[in-house]
Length: 225
Image 1: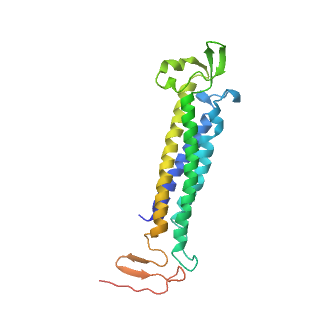
Image 2: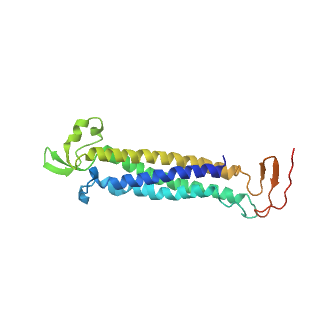
Image 3: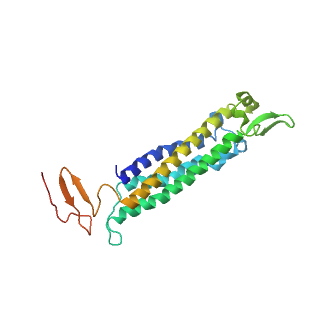
């Protein structure tokens, strides 16, 4: 598979992941599927890790990766082959943007899971208050502590499930963008394997050299066995 075609596969994979992250972040605003007051929503939800980090910032590299397959490689400082090489090299920058965005979402999600949700609970010192009853992820290993949260109902299950999805999706996005960094380097250093301008394409025992100045056929030499 050519480096451009492989990048397109990565782009196709990133788009649904970005959509899933945006939806998860939106759902976190509605614990247990209900509308509550904004001040009673867990603060990490307002950091928009899924919407901005793994969502919007991931759209740009995904679209760039998708466009690499059909990128016009002709003409670049008198060298026809460097157009695609430059495109592959620039994709590394967008992959880095994707890593930063997904990394931000992963950090926010990890902190939210460790801290636990904001909920209405019975404090031993201050009575029933809105706050964070859990500390250092102690509730993860003891489900009996989940009953501390009285309102919103099922907020622990809701937040834990959605932030866990965001965490997993973010890690996958980081891995895919990291793969594109390697793919982009190979494409920039070695060129595209499909034989673009200045290259030779072999297909069905035909040898078709391309023009050295423009992406048009200059002459065709067909050799048949």
